[in-house]
Image 1: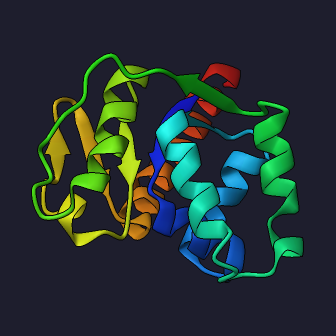
Image 2: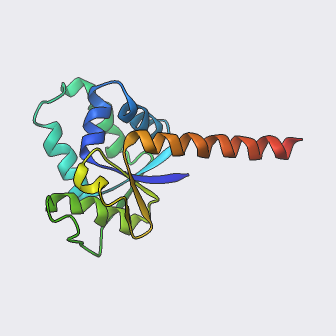
Length: 149
């Protein structure tokens, strides 16, 4: 199963509106991907959700899944990076990604996106991730079909 880190902007967009971020959040919700978080990442999610950008009823299930630790890996980063100089708060996603050994950080943040890659982690927009994830799913389906024939 693919492990990912989601930037706060993807979480908020996925909870509040239809579109590609919602598809990714639904993949996590239904157990198709593992969401990796740290205490700092979770605190940022909650801080932004408490700004009432979206109604609480639209994200209660999100908080419940996190509390139940469903499809989640919680990490305590040992390393703290200072790579994103323009917005140092974004570094928490890199810290979390390295500690949890994810393949992808998914974001709409230009400061993170311009890195493109950090260590072995690809930093992608929701659209690019969905293209890759769709290809990954199709490839697995082809392998499964080949095993049956």
